[in-house]
Length: 185
Image (cartoon, rainbow, N blue to C red; front, side, top):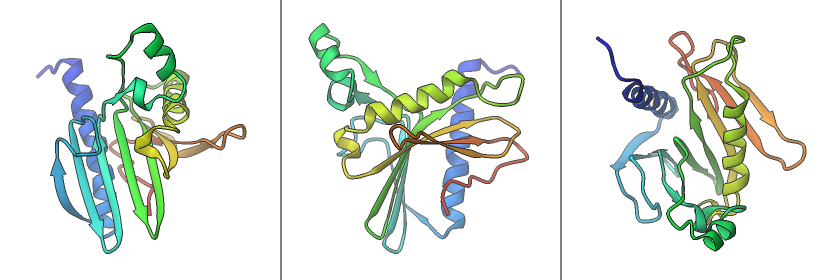
């Protein structure tokens, strides 16, 4: 059966989220709630809140952030140009709190690779732009913000630190043979 490409992307994004949820479940977390809208989030498709003792994790699928309010670089420019409807929409956001440490991963789920099996460079740049642009967002105030790129690659996961700004991007291949999500734990 043929599936429209747009629907397949949604299925792949959900699969990526399920892999992250499964990693937390394996670590001993249990689901506390599943929400479509949370008071401190402008909008999202779904949010899974998980807990294990004093640790919490929230996995958010496609949070929609008003660029004027949340953008470090483009908010003032968009406001001056009358771009009030502009949004920043990362595919995936993971908020993890443990022993007073707050770690946020924000990024994209892509279903494209190059001939080398790696994601296209523009996908890495997009995640880096999320990290840099959302760094001063009120949503991430007090959080260590990192990037996350999930794609259907066949190589090992890598973390790409930036020496200039301290930004980190976790580039994680997710496929049928590598289903273990290894950023947490």
